[in-house]
Length: 266
Length: 157
Image (cartoon, rainbow over all chains, first blue to last red; front, side, top):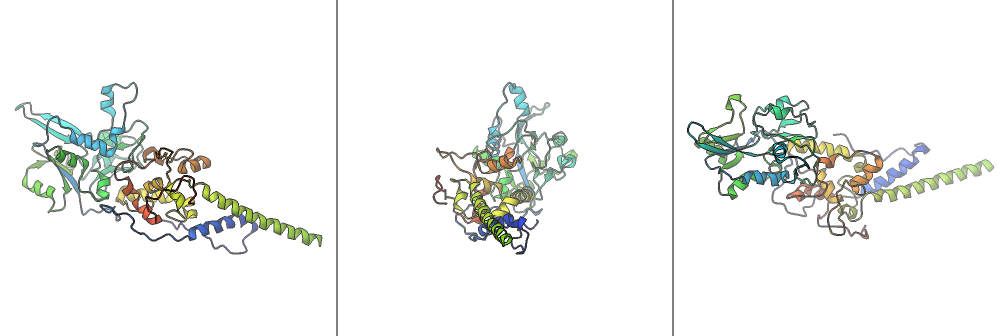
């Protein structure tokens, strides 16, 4: 970053044209001279916000036990909507409900699978799978779609131009596009018209040192405990232990994407 | 002799002009920070005032990359900090969106005719759980208790 300090100690023989500026600088320097009290902790916080950049020492992921995922339950979807402000979007006037259901931003979908030979029905939540080799990142022309060092695949909305290539590339239909001007956004989740978005594993919770994600909390509160969140690289983490014990699969494992979201019971 | 008198007169006018500019600029320096905001009770922002005036966009831009890509949320240059400290509330204690044209960000940007895109996506009032965490570092850097709210009449400034 460049030096932000303006030269305030100009030579005394600067031309008369400079006098107004010098006068201003004098005032500014006076204000600048006010000593700011060094960081005094005035307010205790539950968890410290992150102060160093994320590293590849962790890889966040989810393990979903489809056997525990209940038919008709949408606790995780609703919690996600509340957490990320998706519940603030409104159906545009004149749009049909069918069109709106198709177009509104959705970060988690409930999917119901049926094996036609046996009749076995499986329910599962479907969100961004946080691939190690994400196709959305491959196709992004601006570099807006990226994978953070800790494995979270997300969109940098500052550079997203809304071309939606990533939506086409995603094998999981995990991404949404914001079509309309947004209002009343949440401080922790900025979102606006013209950008693509998807599940980011509650990235603000990660950065503020919180333990889990909104969907995991909601699933636990609903009494299902079908989703486990954790660090895939930590051998002591609950998710790694469960992965070691139970059989799990990636969806579309034929694509060799090495997803960070795994499913058991399918 | 007459020449000397004219020269002295010119110098006097020049000095007076410098003084007047200084006073006018000093008065100007206070107008943008709105009475009734937390910022109104402070000596300066998270950086000296002249730096903030010239470089706030660069500070925010640098910060945004560190936050989005590195996950760093503890910097004093967070936009959430700007909003929470510079926002003022109406008579019913409802915060007024900071990009409206009479508010801190909106007024200056309207005057300078510079498009203000931040609030197309970012919250223009502190909103939702954890909003105070996002602005915590900025408050800490400015050395202010976040509970301070300047009186609407600006008497304590």
